[in-house]
Image 1 (cartoon, helix red, strand yellow):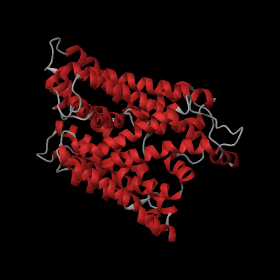
Image 2 (cartoon, one colour):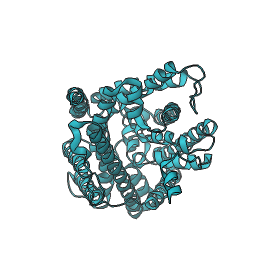
Image 3 (cartoon, one colour):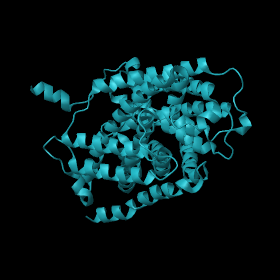
Image 4 (cartoon, helix red, strand yellow):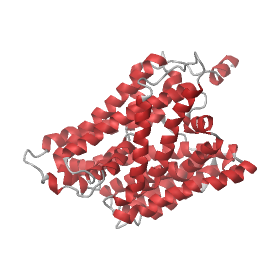
Length: 450
């Protein structure tokens, strides 16, 4: 028994092979975004070639970012995450601002965004009127928060089954879309969305590639991480990029660039062309279950991040209360659920709830991605002679510099969101996220005194 305890509290065991790491990474990255984001990307490009190039560029940018995070994780594997990197690299104040933004903008906004994907596809099965997507989104948030309050355990087996169904569904849509695609030219490329923003398109592309920053934390459990982490990151991103390219070629072949732009549930529309209404409903069910699984994971982890934040700072001590019944951070779950529902309600009155949540979170998300990338240069400058982490970014400083410049461009593009296809409709969402983030500055000053 004592020996078992020693293993639990000891160092991570390096048991993962390259294949294991690649499989885990693909599962972390692929989510419900690929069923929704392509239609928004299509609305911000002028041709099919530009559309496909955006997805290829997304893979390359994600690879650069994953390599940066892999080195950061190898330097501070015992804590992990942006909070630790920012605290060690740029100070406790920056880390506080990140933690505050995570619980009020980044995590809650991400849950609401996935909730709207669930709502859009649930509406394909049983529509509930004008605000159908928002109603389903709110019901999903309420139901899953309640389940977590009870203390429902997550099922790893269910996660694996849903990932497999998700990938199979994507392959079916891709191959079917290419097969049914009309050989005759679609609507003239010039008629595609005029006045779109390529930067805005890339926001949605990179959102769909999200998750590689979690995959980079596998370093402590991979055999020979110095050599194999590069292989896992490269082949994992290559695999995801290949799948996304195939799926988007299928979308493009079946609907054309303008058909994608006008679609609310692009995969369901393609499946409807392939297998009729029953096929579209089956795919919608798969996406809905996958979205619920993703939301549940985000609600579970997000509440625990809020709990840790409450334990670290006395001002937010109420979030750091743990309820023994069900073994859950009940107060943090209720806070997170309330903020998410408020975001869902506000987004219900915009042209597209999913896009509104991306507008709300993107400036804040890219601000901290940029700051986290810059911490690598800080750590390198502090290195003493002979000090080498287990993994170092190849091509330094070009690769991390390219990543940081991309983050800066994406930050600019996310603030420029209001010039996108919906114009000023999302201006309040962009401003709201920035204001909420900035509110963390006076809160930190108060917390520091306490």
